[in-house]
Image 1 (cartoon, rainbow, N blue to C red):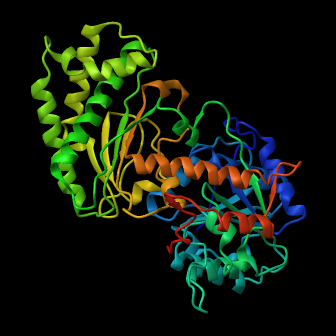
Image 2 (image 1 turned 45 degrees about the vertical axis):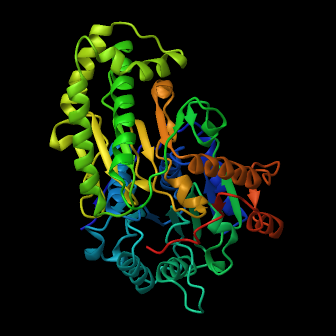
Image 3 (image 1 turned 90 degrees about the horizontal axis):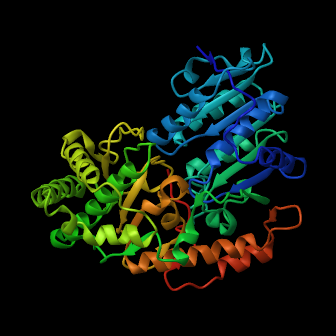
Length: 475
């Protein structure tokens, strides 16, 4: 049966509690709204705060959170609920495990808010829609929160028939005039320009504002945190791979070791290799990584290590980082290298093998493609290679979502390096220009009305490296 989950109404991890109040105030005038924040800028925290306020003030009877497009993202969202401290009763929590057995007729007897956390997937949505409609809930107020709203939720079928996920979201949203739809995304381009998703199209955008600790797309205005590498084509070129992998692993080793030598707060970091969308390539890449680690290990010697890492040390020095205890750095290098040579610390993360928690227990190398390119949070990401873009123009939404290094990383930001080809760098600069075009429509109240002029300007923007959107992929 259903279980109760207790929510602390005083979240202390949001930068601006007022954001939640402003988001909910939008529903005084609009039935649908979209929250726009950069990748890993705090959208999930905003969702939790909104849900907390809804429960505290009994603003809605049912909250449906479409909390992920795959099991990893859903589990990450569920973990956030588990982290919330106990304060007061008032919520019945349903997930994929217990919703089938729940009698919706009896759920509202205790006047609790019903929170449904589910994957954005056809079977789950059909079940929820049927239960809501069959339980005669027209007098109940439903808040439907659609995370990653540009992915799967957009009607991407250009024929007369609507895509199934879009149809089911529309069915729940339009079940009652009391219902509201709140969307979240870092890439709202498809939500803005798609004309065949009219039923769920947001009427207004609320931009989340990140503080100075946030590392976002503006890093591409300087050369401080990224380096250009050779483009890796879809057909895996082992020589190019090895060259780039050794560069990334060396930088990861030395930056990691110097950080932990210079700071009392020790961190086990992550190196992310977002190289190939083709799942079958990932085992081949893992073998290549192991060979690179063996090559580096052969070069590691007490008398020669400093010469071997001199370019990387110069890079850190150029960013104002001091190189202090060289003996301790050498010991750390060996410790990290020893960890990375363990089978359990080189992880393939894709649909064939999707179990991973970013917990900082040990240093890790993560290999993947599409699964690690949207939504998944790497808490301790220090170095990333990203080079699996199409040879033609890049979709702005897909490219922005792949920037898993974005986030609140001020504590170690000067130790970070992102390796990517020139084309990808230029694409990010164009995405920043696209975002600015949208944000320039912000009015005196801090919100953006989705007017015909905004739609036309976004739709007609011309870029050399990006397309505005891939059109909203199906789930």
